[in-house]
Length: 201
Image (cartoon, rainbow, N blue to C red; front, top):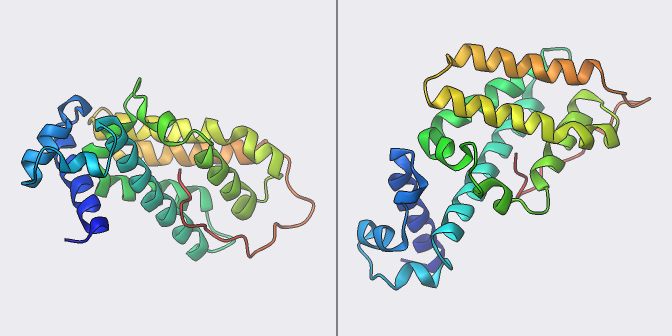
């Protein structure tokens, strides 16, 4: 198995262990045992279990960001883009399931450690600017608010505390409220702002 394949395999194994919803079950020893490799091998790819979880979160976030951007690009400019954004986010969350819920649970240090440079907020700001014509500085300023709303919705829904349609509709309403009260660009943003590899939510 190539080095990159082995790394992805170890991440997949960590995701399987997270199926219980508890990050504390992910240890380097358990990952090695479940993967059928030596106890030392995971350390050739990750410093420790937290580093492994941070990497897993980044991988999940990149997949999520790509799904959202693709859905918004395909949406009608005159359609309800807030609803498209919310649906894309939560549809991708289905595939991430309890793994994503465990990584973003309240109090988890993983999201902040995975995104020390604020690329998730930058990405949300770029969505607001590109698809909703929100003025760039304001878009960046409210990005954390939207990011928190989406993550919070995921957490309550994936714990079966709220029905998915309610979470999707509420997230779309939050986006609409932010956009309705935001200063917009005097001209439409440049249409060629691309989704960049590595963009996260």
